[in-house]
Each structure stands twice: as C-alpha cells, then as structure tokens.
Length: 79
Image 1 (cartoon, rainbow, N blue to C red):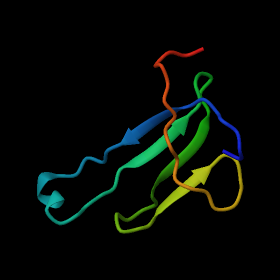
Image 2 (spheres, helix red, strand yellow; image 1 turned 180 degrees about the horizontal axis):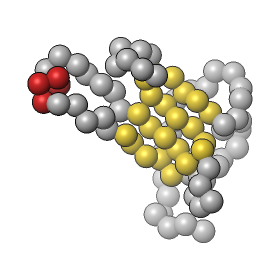
Image 3 (cartoon, helix red, strand yellow; image 1 turned 45 degrees about the horizontal axis):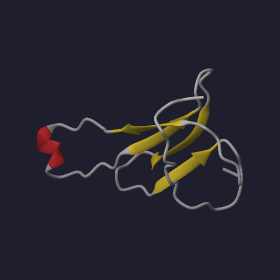
Image 4 (cartoon, rainbow, N blue to C red; image 1 turned 90 degrees about the vertical axis):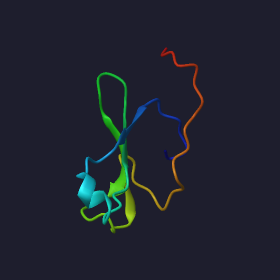
C-alpha cells in the first residue's frame, strides 16, 4: 500500500446462498484486510451490491489505480 508493507490479516467472506439460488446466481467472495489489535481497517475488495457488479477495492491510503493484492508468505507467527 503506497509502496509500504503493512502487517494485516486477510479474511475471505463467503456469502451464504440458498441451494436453489446457487443454480442461477454466482456471487463472488469478498476479501477484507484488518490490522492486528488494536484492529483497524486496511482494505476491502468485493462487489458493491449486485453479484454482477465489478469487483472494487476500498483502501485506507488513497492513490491511483493499483494491482491486485498479493499475499506475503509468513511463518505463521506474529512479532
């Protein structure tokens, strides 16, 4: 984000869709990144309202267009 690396946790949000609706509607997952405690917002990616809406990104830091987020390999422990 803005040329900096910020520690954060990524959460994947899977929408619950009734089985019958799954035959007709494909709802994309949304992603949200939060900072470790004290928790703060970093980024959100997902469709705004309708499943057919384009995927948008909302960042804490303003800027121009940015590429897709890439996960950073970690050891699974926090400093």
